[in-house]
Length: 429
Image 1 (tube, helix red, strand yellow):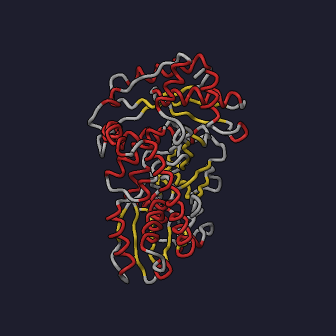
Image 2 (spheres, one colour):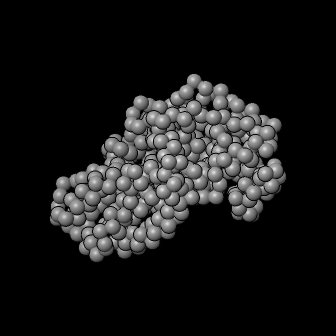
Image 3 (cartoon, helix red, strand yellow):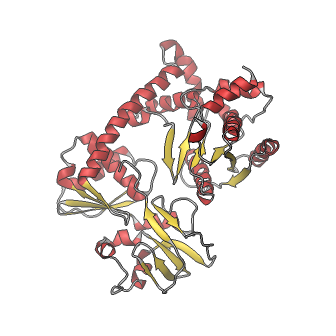
């Protein structure tokens, strides 16, 4: 393959010039896949008169990580590509691989939100898709898991796109880099058999004689994805018919209407509601999900149930799903975040610079006590909302004094710092 043909073909996978965003971020670790993504994106965006910005997350998990990030910066400079090194540090809790993955994406999402960038491109390939399906098959995943990764997915306020996912292999990307004399960094963990993905990669070569090839697994993922779309549409219709989604960030579910659907549709819709209310990207554990659903729909007045960062409370014919205050406080304490607040609310300061003495935290019990019950500005929707729902909305604070509650709406002064909040209810919900 020649340089022009190869890069042209890869660049074409980003789509027509007029469909590209004005500015996009490119995730570049320094590995062969991401460096090929960088070079192809640079060609596509430059030809369209648009801008691609490179982001490298220094996770600090290996001694060479800082040097590798600097190497990527060195590759970007002569091409005129703006490059940023973001840092993430493991806090020692949970699974390291999962925490590192989420930490990288959160760091990049925060950067993108701060720069008003809506699209982040990653270099996942057909090989990644095949390995993902095989690993999920080994874990006993259902149709959702076997659908593999999506080419486009919303994540923490941005859209992640994978232009190579179902079209291009690792070997093709590395051949393209070789043709243009572009180097890349080989991560030693890619040969560490202690990782499931490395095991899956090696196992695929063993399974190929049985017909379980990478291509076959990618085809399986595509078929499962089409089935998943049908099931997701049924769940979305059920949410529309049986649930009310409040602009204050909670959901109210009519049990009788909900129970008319099939068991799979109910569990799928229930998981979706929990993700919407909690701001979580990943679904809860299936067994825990089914157990909680049985408790809140099968009894008249059970005690409150917590799951996936939500509080579930049955009252008569309805189940109210609210953000769990303790989980919201853990997720949002520490001030203003670049990405959607608690994964649920878009915030807008009207272009004003943020006063460093102000912080954004959940309203909480302390905030509710500071909002006068007789305030004329507070809406009826706020007054009627469950206490947990009001507590877990964003508030602007000066120390321990609540300055404003944008969703009430209420402020402590006639002319408070401007900030508005809007709930994110992703389509089709």
